[in-house]
Length: 339
Image (cartoon, rainbow, N blue to C red):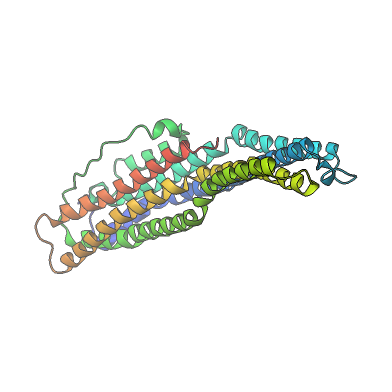
């Protein structure tokens, strides 16, 4: 051990070294949350406005092409009013998309979230390596400043996957290992597992009722086309029949628009792939959590030779899994099918 003192004093000194991460981490998380809220607002608003404009255009076209245009014409809904409505909705939806692009809302969100996660990784990687306590060479501070000052292209950053190294430091002080392990389990691993569990369950619940609708609406449009064709071929020329034909034609054209809007909103957050990603990492970290809790009990009965190396390797493995999950999330969101 490079530090001198009781195990508690040594570990507390290491925690104090890490305190400098707190402020830049909080700032990065605040900026990431703000960008995320704007990104989600843009995705939903642009999809809704665009779909509404297309539905209005479809409805107007269908009604005006038949003999039922008197239903939508008149002093309140003149053709000019409908045209203005279509233009306003279309331009507004395009404006939201352009705002998101030029304001780089998505890029800002991913960059700030990337910084926040890297601050956390820096902190815990320092803590799980007792040979780095204290930061005598200033390496921790240098890495911190590098993360604070850089503004990386996250699309390029995630392509530079590091080779994992699980070389455990030579530390056989059972009290230090126990203090570190207790802190890590409580402060890092339990919270991370709870986060993955809540996200996996929440995303799965949303997908359970959202996923079927875009496909269902798309195929319902086929039904609308079939019914429309049937009525035109076998029904008479009464105003009621013509109205029904127009309604079916509008539904057949409009349902795919609604389906596309729903798919755009879902894909803007990659709900399906993120749900499976959270579930996979939850499974792996839960397994490691069990192993580390067993190791904690072993320490209390006496630390066997070489056991500390296994514990520290498992801690490194936890951090690697968390970083790997973060990189995978960045990749998914970079490729999210919105803008």
